[in-house]
Image (tube, rainbow, N blue to C red; front, side, top):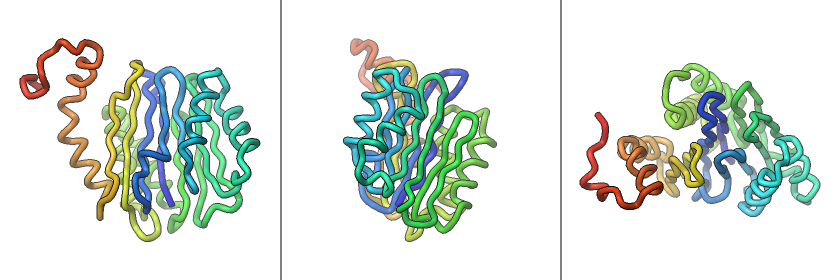
Length: 224
């Protein structure tokens, strides 16, 4: 019951996922990423343990297709799940199990993957794809969120959405952006509101984790 976009920026090597679903707390089960390793989405009967296993495989230098193959071999419910992986070298792989609820599918493109299930049709994925390609000049995290909004506007998920999440890693071991809306009547719109409030402080929180001695956030002056 989810639609997502995963991407890797070939210029900066940032990695990220934007996702929305009809159930609660999608950010705790679907998106996984780590700098210089890769990015993963586990969807349809999402299980965080599978995402964690995928990240361990990436840490062991498995490539994207090898990760997906290993997940399928070790999962008795593989036909009920959707998987997508992008490794740090830009390798990509995705799989839609045969028992996913229609409409379900995925698309693999040059630097990103879009996928979803329980959708009204492929137009949701087309909305994600088209908007991500059309926003090349925007910051990476904004491109992901804008694509998610376009997927929602193109049809979203059957029955609407309840939760949404945005996860982005740059080159640090901590996330550059990790925002979640766990329960809301319009979670993608709420995620946009939270993101716009957080956006000016992204450099501050990156700097603070690198050096905790900097001034408190309320004394910090965002760049205009």
